[in-house]
Length: 255
Image 1 (cartoon, rainbow, N blue to C red):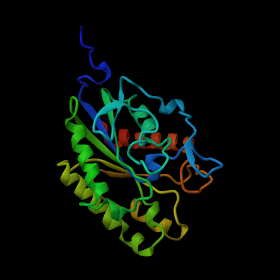
Image 2: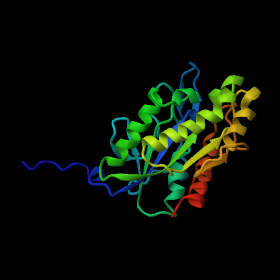
Image 3: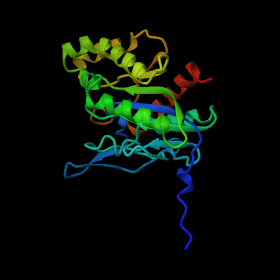
Image 4: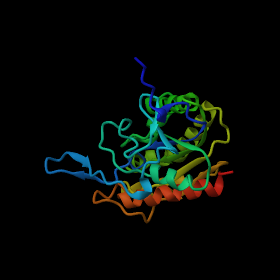
């Protein structure tokens, strides 16, 4: 009896342009996540057209270190202790694909509720991000890491000490990622936060916007609509943010 062939979708994918998605909950995506009467949360399942899957062009790297067609929610098997919904990754990829050729590979790494100190070299989150990035480059046809998209900082707005240390820790993170991936000029597109503890939120934002390292750009989330929790971006805001990140990448780094 003839053996069945593996799904062609996953066979010998061409070299990919790889983007690392990292940070905390607003990168992992909470768009469309609703609270039920029993206080549990679930995603409403609504996928805007800007976030639609593209089985020919956009793939995601799973928690098992395999490529598959990218679909919302991108972080469902990464940020496993929370309910994930729409984030900026799919709208980013769909916007970028209109201007660049080839396959796009998204590597979700964000975990909700995490502070910058939890992303230090040697910590689980950082080490897992580097592991996933390296594996993505070499798996199933290989690829090239084009940028890191970073959205984090809300968890550092509650303490003056954390806010005071944020800029130095973020600069150290950028240095370490570039060193450990052997990509000294790796583009970093970070998001200036739009929510958090009001007491030190502006200090974190100032730190984010004041980083002056080569190939580091900042996209400002202020003005994007927040959900009722006043912390997470709505689905519509996530779509817009993804497009803003795409504009920043295309304007600054796309060849």
